[in-house]
Amino acid sequence: MGPDNEELLFQHFNEFLDHWDSFILTSHREPDADATGSEYGLYHALRQLNKSVVILNSDQPESKFTYFQTEEVFHTIADTWRLPQDDFAVIVLDTGDIDHIGIAAEILFPRAKGVFFIDHHNIGKAKDLYPSLVAPDRAATSELIYEFYVNRGLEITTDVAFALFTGLVFDTGSFVYPKTSTKTFAIAQKLMELGVKPKEVHSQLYEQLTPERLKLLAEVQAGMELILDDKIAVQTVTQDILHRTGATMSDSDNMINYPLKCKSVLVSIFFKELDKDSIKVSLRSKGNYDVGAFAQMWNGGGHSNAAGFQSNEGLDQLKPKVLSKLCEFVQKTP
Ligand SMILES: [Mn+2]
Image 1 (cartoon, helix red, strand yellow):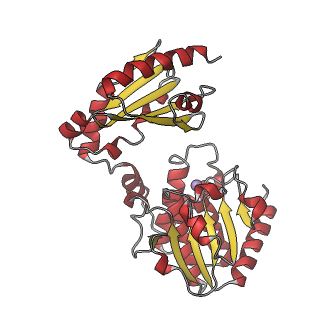
Image 2 (tube, rainbow, N blue to C red; image 1 turned 120 degrees about the horizontal axis):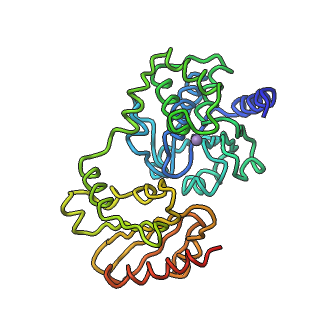
Image 3 (tube, rainbow, N blue to C red; image 1 turned 135 degrees about the horizontal axis):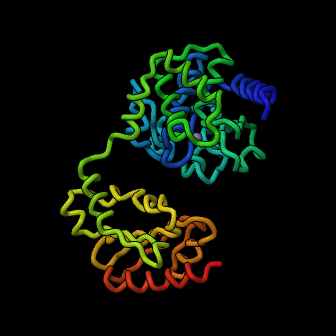
């Protein structure tokens, strides 16, 4: 997308803003650092433009994604009393897919007088249905919000600079993912000039692990097995391990992804013992190893590279059965 085209999109957005006095900002479920950074940025931009504005997401963001806020602005759709009494329009940030918004879409869309999407993803059908500012060549939605401040000549406070910088760092994997551009670095420079300390942002995002989670990680990885010529990685969390480490089951989130960093690993499987006869099994894969189809065989579901199922069998009975089927399944995949 050329810059001229982007300018036109900003013009559409400005026209949209002119129509309403009251706005609700929302984003995808489990809002991440780019979702919250761009929401926080746009919230303050619209306040400067004398608009009334509320942020209502389906889920409360993790605190590491909102550390930059100096006032409480992130609310969930459960706080419906915050819905404006008068007409309002909705601005959706950081997703182009209505299905990713969650319950907020079901409650907000029927009541909204207008809906506008601001996003940087290549996918999502919303741009065919609603007016939008979608720039797939941009590394983060936070970049677009920065450009909006420039476009309207608004003042970027240090808090907002931190928020937008956090979005940039997160969505670019600390300035290395493919969409990281010279524009990204130029924006990062401006935000630093406004007072952002990159080390502080990095520390808030990536150095907040609890000791319990670190101990859990050590135990889970110590128990990891590689089977089928190192093609399948198997990890397990038992109630015993949780007791020993003081961690909770949610502390094991994302640990399934780590083995995929290994060249030879094609499928990562993770067993969670919720209790003695309730086991949750998650699967992740690379390439054409369709773990969604595998999960369906066990009455579960998901996507081709991320899926799962649940069983009422004990870990000792279930695990060998699942692993032998999984080996067959991987061997059969062309
Ligand atoms: Mn994003």
